[in-house]
Image 1 (cartoon, rainbow, N blue to C red):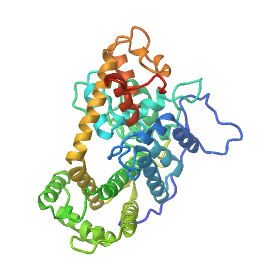
Image 2: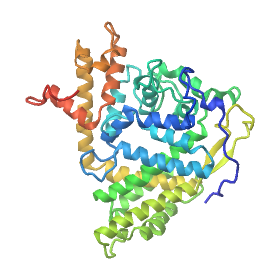
Image 3: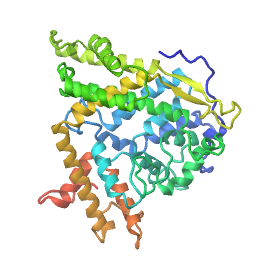
Image 4: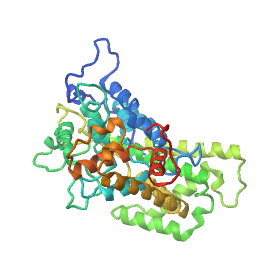
Length: 439
C-alpha cells in the first residue's frame, strides 16, 4: 500500500470560500465554516431529499435492504471523509462535495439517464453531473436575493469531473451545459491558469477524492447488494466464460499495466473475498443467516478500508505552494493494482446484475416511462397547465422548443421513481389517479 501521507494539511484560502453572490453573508455569530454551511444547504435541499426515492441499482421498493441514491450518497460522504482525514484535505468540504455528487440523477438509475440523454440530444443535452450544477445554480431556492444555493467555489469545483461544454456535433459522453459555462470558468479558473497555454482544465484534488470515494462505494456496496439479492454467489466465480470475459475487458482497459490482470483478479477472490466471506467457498458449509449478514459486513468494511488506506497524494511541480489556491497543488495517488480491483468488482455487478434479464426488463420499463412523460410534456401545447405551480414560471409564453425541453427535462429528471410512475399512470392509464393526490 502507499505510504501514509505525512505532509501538512491543505490550506484553504478566502478564494476557495468565495461565493458568487456576495450579499449572502453569514451571521456575525455563525460558528460554522463556509464548507459546513454548504453541507447543510445541500442536505436541506429538495433535490437531495428526493434521492431517497431514486434507484441506485435495484428498484426502490424491491426491498428495504437495497440502497437508494440517498443512502449511496451518504456512504460516499462517509468514505470521502475517511479519505480527507488520511490525505489532510478539509473533511467538511469533501463531505459537501460527496453529498452533492448525485443530486442531478433522474429516476430509475442509469436507465433514466440514458433515455434523457437520447431525448435531449438536440436540445442542449442531458448529463447527470451537469444537472448537479444546474440544480445548485438555478433550480434550488435559498434566498429571494438570488437563484440556487450560492455554494462556495471549492464545493462547486469539487463537482466538476467534466468541464467540456456540450456540443451536439460531438459524440460526447460527459459534459456541462453551455448555459453554465460562466459558472464553470468562475469555479475553476485557476485550473487553467496554472497550466500556461493549456486548453484543458484539471480536476481539483477534492474532485479526485470524491471520484475515488464514489468508485469505492459503487463497487463495494453494489457487490453487497448483489450478494444479498442472490445475483452473485459461490458459483458465480466458477462461470469461467463470463469471468474470463471480464478479465479480457480489464486487459484492454489497462493495456499499459505491467501487472498480470489474471493474478490480481484471482488474488482478490482467493486471498480477500473468500477469507472474509466464507459463503464464497463453493463446497464449504454455508453460514447461518445471521452469520451471513455479519460476514457480508466484514467483507465490505474490510474492502472499504483497503481502498482508503492504499491512497496517498502527490505534489504537482507546475503549481507553486503560494498559489491563490492549493486545490490543484496535489493529485490523488492510487496504485494501479487497486484501481484494477475496483474495476473488477464493478464489472462483476455489471455482468451478473445489470445485464441480467430481471434488471434489463425493469430498465426497459423505466425508459418507456421517462420517454412517454418527456414526449407528452413536449407535445402538449398547454404544457404549463400540467405542471405544478412552482414550475410554471420557468416556462413563459412563447418559449422556444429548447427552453421547453430544458424545463421538461428538469421536471422529469427531478422526479422520484414512484412519482414518475404515478404521473405516468395519471396520464396514460385509465381509472388511475385522483384530484386529491398532491402534485
